[in-house]
Structures are given as C-alpha cells and as structure tokens.
Amino acid sequence: MRHQFYGGVGRPGADRILGGMSGRRSPEPATPGVSRAERTITFMIGAVGGLSLLAFIIILVANFAGVRSDGTGFWPALVLLPYIGFPITILLIITLAVLNGRRRAKQGREDSGGH
Image 1 (cartoon, rainbow, N blue to C red):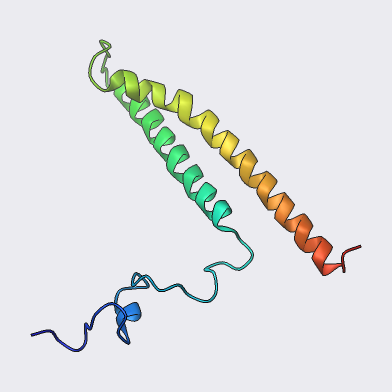
Image 2 (image 1 turned 30 degrees about the vertical axis):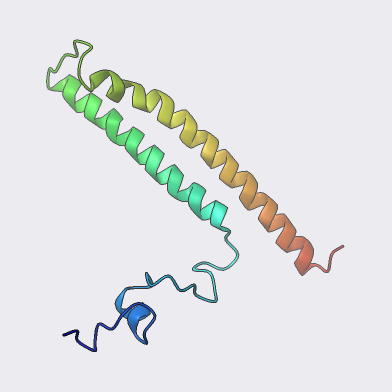
C-alpha cells in the first residue's frame, strides 16, 4: 500500500517531493536572462577546470612525497590531464565571455529601443 504523501509522478505534490525531478517544466528559467548554453558552459568550466586542478595538485603532492612514475598505470593519463584540461578551460571561458557579451549587447539594444 502506498502512502498518499508520496504520491506518484504527476500527482499533486510530487514535484515538491521529488525536488523538481518529476519532468514537468517550470514556467520560468532558474536564472532569468541566462541561456541554457551559458549554464552548460559554466558547468563544463567548473568540471574540466576542477578536474585539471585536482590532477595538478595530486601530481604535486605525489612528487613531494617521493612517488616516481615509471610510465605505467594511471600516472601518464594523470600527468597529461592538466596539459589538455587547462587550455580547454581557457577556451570555454573565452566562449562564455563572448556569449555573455552578445547577450548583454542584445539586451542593451532592446532596452534602448533598438537604436
């Protein structure tokens, strides 16, 4: 027997219980004026940059602890990750800045009456 409190997806209160995961779209975006592409790129910057920074810190700590890589295992991939991740992060930051600038310029034109 199911409790009435939990309900099911699509029932009243399900969206509140599931924390917005019921599949129904809210009428307003989470952050007004910010596009889905900008949010996605922001999360990609955090993920790629954070992973690269974490790999860099692990390499530094392992090096200070006296760990020597013999070219096997996961060490070559771990060493290569910051070499690829940091430039990708910089390119994503530039992309986000361009998208943000275009959006703000468009909003500025719309706010000034199109002149």
